[in-house]
Length: 73
Image (cartoon, rainbow, N blue to C red; front, side, top):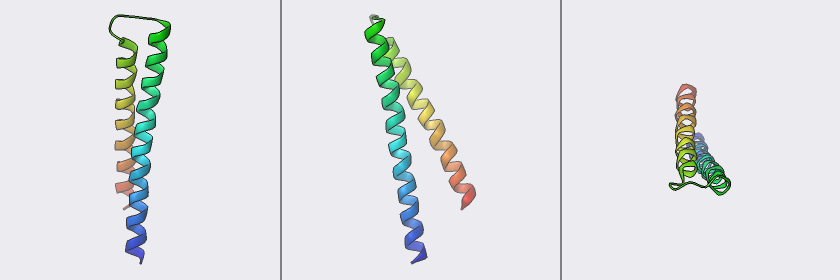
């Protein structure tokens, strides 16, 4: 029973990490789109920059969370 609860806990943690990644990247894209609307350019540069920034921030957060998860185990 304890092993089953541990597996469920890890599944919940990883699901939360995936949701957090999606939200972080989505916020970056949203900010970039709004900036591109207000400051038009030929390449949608703000959307590209902020979406990539969101990806890097979310990857950093995932790595930190996985490191903390490994320390606890």
